[in-house]
Length: 331
Image (cartoon, rainbow, N blue to C red; front, side, top):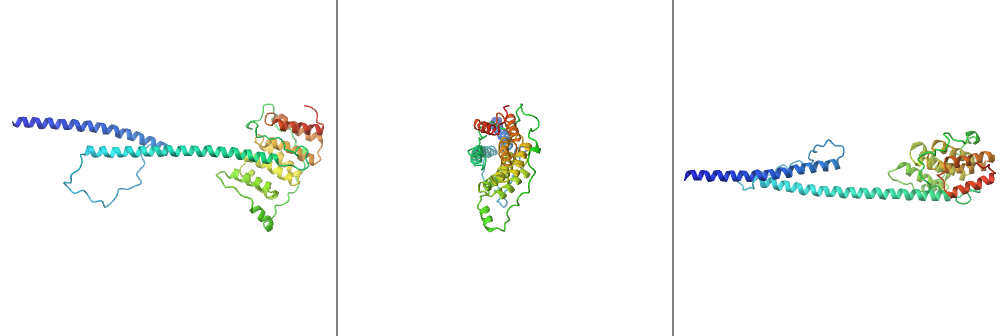
């Protein structure tokens, strides 16, 4: 009898051990999967990390009374199984939140890119539509470059150095100092111009200078645009600001300074988005200065030779009319 009892006990022990081993193997597999998923989440949330787990920011609670001895409790396997299930639920919730955040970020980036494209289009249309007094070609809307291909590289047919010689340009005249803040009426006009505030200071500086120019506050616009060119020479808005600086001088009745500003844009930002515009408006400035037709024709030739695919049909028509007025020789 005693031998039978011992045998039954041994069989029960072996059965329990087998059950516990099976449960332990299943839990080990779940824990391994959780660790792999957690490492993947950490790589997403903390890119460039060392791949190790981060220490918890929440310390264990203190002052919790210990469980009195003899209190009934679940088995260690059942307790571990519950904790693993809780971890699986938390990991699934965290993964869902990360996916939602990434989707929202992608939507924001797409919306910002669309906003930038629309802003550039509006600024281009407004700049090109502004009239330039005293110029036959600019009495209407001088052709736009908005629909032309991007100005990333100089065409293969272009010469390595500009044809336009600085000697054909006038000597720089003394610039009129900007009005001081002591003029209350002028200060109120400047204060009424809205200053943009985004995460791109170069773009904000150009847009603010553009708004000052649009409000006919030319000295203030010139100071602002010069600041953009000086602080952000590698930004795409540098070419825009230098070109608009010449437009501001031209509208203020200072063609000498305007011609120098346009030439500087073409020389410094040869591949800039507003380099072709500057060449076109350089002809306007030279006409106002009474320069010989040979110099003006030289600039027209430069525009057509360096940027043949960067100007629209409308601009080509404007250039053709200008060449006819100056009696330029056919190329």
